[in-house]
Image 1 (spheres, rainbow, N blue to C red):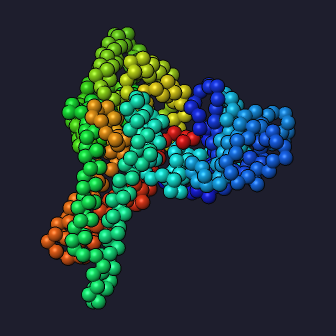
Image 2 (tube, rainbow, N blue to C red; image 1 turned 60 degrees about the vertical axis):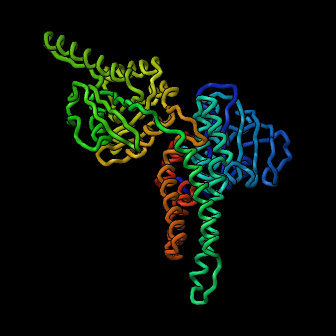
Image 3 (cartoon, rainbow, N blue to C red; image 1 turned 180 degrees about the vertical axis):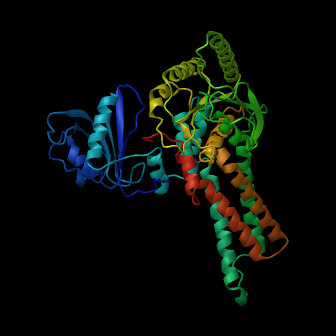
Length: 486
């Protein structure tokens, strides 16, 4: 992960994209006061921003031009947190002004000119996590609050954000750490025959911990997935990498893969199980315009194309989720027009869409799709997912998004956000098993070394849930789903 650095200052537009009455630019890092001093003029001209020690609300103007500050001034309100009493526990600020995208872009450019780096997706919340402001389950709840499209999902996210899941797990970890400390102290002084904790006390503490873990497990399992198979349709232009992606998801050769556009002319389907969820994948002919100089062949090709388009449209209409595959190569004008039409069709039919940028190992840019993709914002839950079927890069993230979609659409109620459920279910099961084994060892007096080893395993699994134990892959999975500015 490229954004574990927290000793520089970051900035981003934090409000929703598009025109609005108000817009927000967020800044966080050690040099916020210096940056504001250089580009923001408060109405109180005698105020020294560097001397502030409490959160302060300031009216004033942001000077858009460094050389001529009086020629272009953007009025607004600056909310300034000079100490760790901020979201990230760093010096932070938010500039609230008019919601014009052009004005916000100019303001961000000015702030960047004074030394702020453009923030990466999820970087503000990542800094809040790394500073101890929240744990991983609460960070996931932040994203769930942003993405909530119902009162039930919002209530679930807010409960988890307030510590509904982290609180019980933190208490369980404290219990287990206390028992482990007593056990290891006894092992250190085993020759002295000093008992720091009795076996009966160990049993009681392990029973309490096991009960709490099983309670949390019950909350998670109450939100099951639908009994029906999730239907996922792959769509996109010919040679957009659909067949390769299909094979990569299935794990075997199900579709013919060649460099010749239009190789797949019929519907290919396969059953696969991901994270315990049954999924039916379907790959259809690409959206392309077949051309020929011979009228008879052109007419035939047109009929084939119409049938292929109808087949793909039917496949998408019957799907629960569409994976719209977009390759980095610049398409021909006709191809781009056809895909634009398909995007409009997806939008009109309000189908759930995940945009997948295939062939991510190629150097070409997908900037030519930026504008059309904006039309899918209301049906696509997250930004495009880069995937390379040949190397497997991005496949885990894509599988996570697919299974998260399946979990979110399930009818079961739970006090746990769907993405947290998927990420933590296996760790929680392993923690439960480890505590149960430790309890069994204690009840049968197998040995303190065995009990301590099982408790350490349980603590490691619980640590992965709340984030006291983490890897770059875990952080990328959690924070890579955020948008910029959050």
